[in-house]
Image 1 (cartoon, helix red, strand yellow):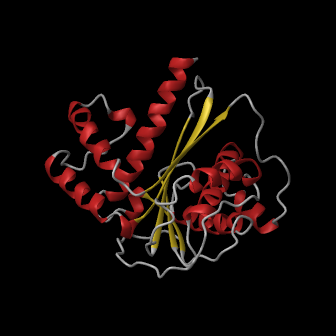
Image 2: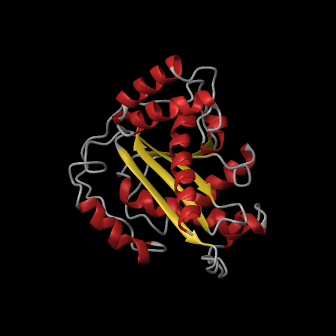
Length: 264
């Protein structure tokens, strides 16, 4: 269900868990390459000491008809392991971008935001976490066309318009796949989205959480703690931390979208 945002400094005891991505679902195509990436960076997240809360922020692009790819960007990090970035974010908000201006790719025509972009991204480079982006060609077929095996999940899915359901399922399955390899047993997960079509109100967020949990069961071999879904607006505690983390994903999505336009 929806939740307010709180920073926890708690660390989990070592579980001996070896990070590995699920080979179920979308993992049949993605797991081997993502596992190879993890093994090449054993000294980094997610092999280090883990925090109590794992945060996943999702952003999407490609809605415009002239764009040839749908893009899905995910930023995953332990809140407790990023206290330095949180301190930098407070300084950034006080000194460089006050008045609750939101960083976003579409708003970079604003002079103050453009001046703030470099220090904003320099701070983002210090985040201990994982940034993943997927680009899916619009020329291909839908990924989820068959009848849902889970009737309860199928009923939950009907809460969304047919035009939104495919995008929603892509987001949930990609999120579940990433969390299968980047989460640790016992971690709480806070899943943040800023998308009106998918999370328009608190009631829809409650159903989204239930649907997400059903999707996750097919990807996970270990148990998590609490799973919560919210939006940047609902979970905002006044610090704009979630807004700024979502902006990192948004800027990555926008930059990739621009690259596609240049290359085509």
